[in-house]
Image 1 (cartoon, rainbow, N blue to C red):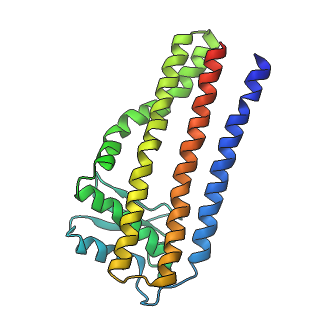
Image 2: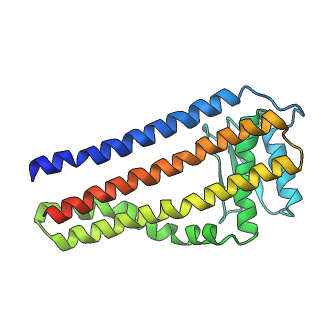
Image 3: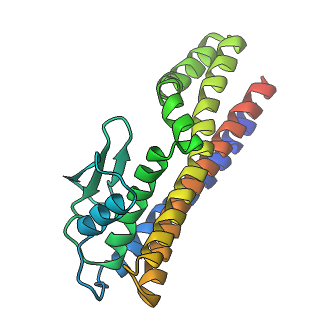
Amino acid sequence: MTGFYYASYGLVIIGALISIIASWNVKRTYKKYSSYGNLRGIRAEQVAQAILSSAGIYDVRIERVLGSLTDHYSPREKVLRLSDSVYGSTSVAAIGVAAHECGHAIQHAKGYVPLAFRSAVIPVVNIGSTLSWPVILLGLIFGWTGLIDVGIILFSLVVLFQFITLPVEFNASGRALSILRERNILYGQELDASRKVLIAAALTYVAALVSSILQLLRLVLLRRRR
């Protein structure tokens, strides 16, 4: 049992390596194209405002938030937050990120079902994320297999959330690239550069899902061994 227990850590290590590589890749890609300014000299927050207005969205605020690549859209608050590395930047990388977040705002405005479902399950997922490991550890300490099962189910909610996140993120990127192309905000190689940045960002979500699936598989295998 001990040998199997330690061997199962191989799944965790593989998942961690995948996540590290994906994180490194998105930072490298963003840094590379953050030095490429767009020909029109338009700033990322201006692009975001133009996209929202063209979509008939006038009740979403655009705010600056601390950090790098901490950009996000909050459906509950109807606030689109752009990070320090994006807000005020004219780079094609920053514009791609800003347009992506606008994609989420458009999803919200149009009632995109996967986004609505993801937002609805967040409270439950937070509970699962917080309690899963303490419950599993208690089950292991006291030898209560039922408690281990509960912990695995709670952790499965996290995996489910990450699975739901994939279509939401890919759809937002697809909307962003279409808008940037159709409104002639970016041209040719500029658009290709933004696409590479958004693909790299999307792969971080794929990596997170794979890592969590491997962790879940390890837990299930350990539970069966017991």
